Amino acid sequence: MSYAFKIRVYWEDTDAGGIVFYANYLKFFERARTEWLRSMGVSQEAMRLQHQAQFVVAEASVRYLAPARLDDFLQLELHLLNAGKASLDLRQQAWRDDLLLAESKVRVACVDALRLRPCKIPAALLERLPEPQPSPALTVPLG
Amino acid sequence: MSYAFKIRVYWEDTDAGGIVFYANYLKFFERARTEWLRSMGVSQEAMRLQHQAQFVVAEASVRYLAPARLDDFLQLELHLLNAGKASLDLRQQAWRDDLLLAESKVRVACVDALRLRPCKIPAALLERLPEPQPSPALTVPLG
Amino acid sequence: MSYAFKIRVYWEDTDAGGIVFYANYLKFFERARTEWLRSMGVSQEAMRLQHQAQFVVAEASVRYLAPARLDDFLQLELHLLNAGKASLDLRQQAWRDDLLLAESKVRVACVDALRLRPCKIPAALLERLPEPQPSPALTVPLG
Amino acid sequence: MSYAFKIRVYWEDTDAGGIVFYANYLKFFERARTEWLRSMGVSQEAMRLQHQAQFVVAEASVRYLAPARLDDFLQLELHLLNAGKASLDLRQQAWRDDLLLAESKVRVACVDALRLRPCKIPAALLERLPEPQPSPALTVPLG
Image (cartoon, rainbow over all chains, first blue to last red; front, top):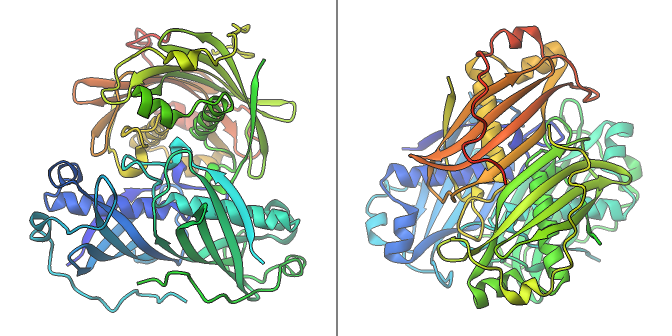
């Protein structure tokens, strides 16, 4: 029921603490969302040109559980929690083998590409989404 | 009661949507935390060398309310919500003039620099912190 | 004759080698170019809206001489080498006190904002530029 | 004779001009170097732990010929120009199909991981390198 996408940790992702810089997990999660849309045949460029619509992140909550390091090969998992008319709720996780490194709950909102005001998700996209499955929320609840 | 730090939005911060990329607010918030510590005379390098301790982000929740754009001059505000023995809770906001663009609740944990295991915040640092003030949480609650 | 701009090195700029990641000097140099233009009253946003023109980097050569580290306070120096009808040649350097850390020769080209084809630099901007001064090239020649 | 590695352009790579930000090609080129080393069985982590050695970029010259955009699928090509005792010279290019977008000449130097002073490239690594082939330099010479 989940989508998975793998990435490698490069020098650019790390910081002087020797680990992946915390903001970079949001880059990883964005890549996973883009690849998830692409896997359903959804092009964000076409969405912008044909529907004048694009996704922006409205909310993101991340819990960092264990550090990732240079050369790590991470599995990014994405789970659709809810699909509204104008927004999607996703759970996104970063795993190294069996170890959960970070998990996030993300709300992406559909906005018109020009004025960035909320708008309906194009029907052609909604039809392609899998059945949302409210999960027991995050594995590790936010404090 | 709050600390404020100003930054400029540069090309590197924006994305093809014409606005600041969502992950980059976490970079901005990190800069504000570092400058806040520096303003109290706390050097993270000294903290690492003398106390073998460093801060890592354990949790971050961000709500994005309005976009920032190239050349914007942002005010980053930081408010200490709570100071525990091994972690600090902060509210961090990004403003452009009177408009709140993004706000975040961040928990930073103190860890030993070698093994990244939780440890006590050095007393010399705790003494310099302002009195924590639990605020009425976020201006705009997370959905 | 040179423009100077100061920046701080933050966690986001460093990598697991403990030093500033080499690509990030190009971010620093871009910030310095933007602030140099701003210091002459040139807004890149106005340039785009009024003249449909923007600058893009056509060439950049960087020599890395010594590493920068977390918390370093760097002076970015910019020197206009040559001003053509459609491009500018700049020498840009990053210093920590008296130590030259990195230096670069950069060519920025003016392009029309829509199709990104070369175009003339707006006269209103050219008039504000200082007299170019071909310097004895880079302090340390490229190998 | 060349090594090739493919990457996707994501939101994080672009800027408000709608194209890939110029500094990010250096990130792409670094990824290609890391994957090239990995393809020869060279782990930079092992190199650091066993030989106390790491690579740093000493020089990089980039020419930007055409812009890359969101969702582009780029082929990164790497060609070993020269292998010295303490440094490697590489030509690195970014292609989209048959269009050369950017090309670079990069010198990476081997340094001891602790003090970052030049040192010999470990023999075990040198043995694995392909025969260097001085190419007719860059396709498009630097101006």
